[in-house]
Each structure stands twice: as structure tokens, then as C-alpha cells.
Length: 175
Length: 175
Image 1 (cartoon, each protein chain N blue to C red):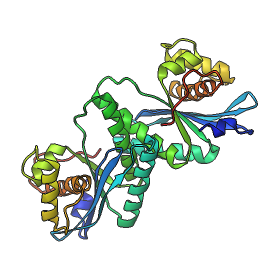
Image 2 (tube, one colour):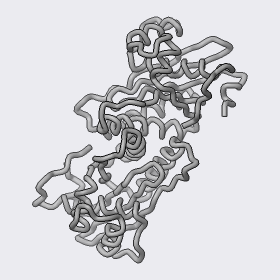
Image 3 (cartoon, each protein chain N blue to C red):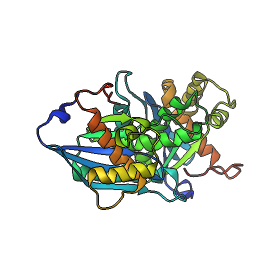
Image 4 (cartoon, rainbow over the protein chains, first blue to last red):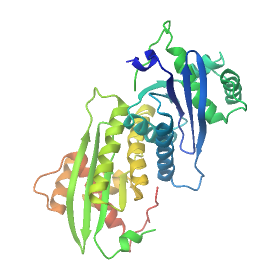
């Protein structure tokens, strides 16, 4: 289950914070305790685009990111709350487009709850997006504060690596 | 918007009834009033499979169906009710995987409510799955009654073609 975490070489992770109009993604490379972030960004889709066009853009962009950086693990922010059924359905569609690409590429896929991500990165489960972005900038030594959605994607990948420690209380389930 | 419906040659439609463990699909070819169904089936994913593996299978299968039959229009059954948020999220993921493939392949995508599909095919908006499957078998001249999910997929494509008539009261919106 955790073969890639035990591999001797660098571990390459893809973090995803999916949403229809602004999916955040980030590549995190871990090598002997050092972390690098060769790519991160937000897949922006204008409000006038049909939803299916956004889904295609999400799939295309993530496929290209995976092709360029060859991650072996994908960590995605879980959705455990939605304002209503319609929101859950739309969020689900964005997740589905992203997960299908990651699964087709053979990545191991894990999910982390937003609260657990914030707890791991900021030390406070209800932390705001700006606090997460600033902490990500500091922890990963980025020149600039990443955009909020990209920061959330890097945060979920980074929180996953912490959850992989030997003392992890709740082993993650592949989804 | 409806260029393919006005084209002189045969019109090829892909109907989809998405769900994580049993996505129905069907190809409907219309040519001078005659309908053919060169392919239909159900993308079955065992309960023990991780959800992301199902999404990959949905994407792969639909991509192959589109490659083989070259539909120009995709019609998908809309979800307007879910038992709870979790169900909506999972249904959304299956829809997202399917829609991303259709959109990447350049299909025009439309959505039809289940009630409207049943009304069009059976004449009764609350018709059961068996009634839909039998009516689809009869209307399309199939040798056997199709599986329920595949029948629903053919039904949504067939209902779309009826909604394309000049007297359609509610023009469909691309999604």
C-alpha cells in the first residue's frame, strides 16, 4: 500500500483541491527530507464556460501535469460538507474529472479532510485560506505566496506526507 | 447550436446514464427516420473496487465507445434528486468522469431529466426501469430487452431526438 513512500529515490506527489471553476494543483517532490515544488497553479474556468468544458480543461491540465512530473501519489482534498445537493453534485463532477485522470495514470490516490489538512499545516483546523497560503509559502520556501487554491493543493500533499509518519494514528485509505 | 441535428447524413448520439458501479451507455444512429443501435452496455465495477478505479474504467470505456462510433452529440441523464449529500457527491464523480471524456472528444452535451425521458419514452414520468427497457426494446427493434442501465442510456438519447422536433416547448441547454 505504501510502497512509493518507502522508495529510496525522491517521492513525487500531486496535490489537488478540486472545484469546477478553480481547481488547485501542486507537485511536491520530497528527497531526503528536502521538499521542492516544481509546479503549482489554478485551473481557472470563466463563469460563461459550460460546465463540461471546465471538466475537459481540468482533465487535460492534470494529465499534462502528470506527464511532465510523473507523480506516483495523488492526494485530494475531501469534501465532507456542501451547502446543498446541487453544490455537492457540481463539486463531485470536478472531483470525478480529476480522479479519473489520476487513476488512469496509475497513481495511488488518497483523500484528506480539509480540517485535517489545516490542522497539519497551520496547527488549527479552522484556519482561513490566507493563513494556509502563508504557511505553505514559509514551509516550502516559496518566493511568493501561492494563490489560495494552489496553496490548498500543496497543503493537502504536504499534510499527506506528515500523515505517513510511523506514528500516524489514522492510516489513510486509498479511494 | 444544433448543427449536427441539421446535418444531412446520419446523426450519431451517445446516451449516458452515469453511476459509479453501473454506468449505462448506448449509441443511437438516426438516418432518414430509421434508428440503429450499434452498441450499448453497462460499465460494471465490482463493489470491492476503489471508487477511483471505477472512474478510470468509466472514462476508458466511454473514450473507446466514442472512438469506435464517432458520435457528435452526447445526452446524459440529469440528476435532480439524491438521497443525501454523499450520494450526490458520488453520482457527481461518475458524471464528471463521463462528461470530461465527452467534452474532450468535442461532443455537444445535453442533459435531460429522468422524468422527461420516461414521459417521452413510456408516456408516464414515473415509469419503472423495466417498463422503460421494454419500450426501448420495442421502439428500437432490439432482439432482447437491454439491461436496465443500458436501456436508460438509449432512452435518454432517443428522448433527446424527440425533443429536437420543431415543436419542442423547452429548448435544451448545452451543459
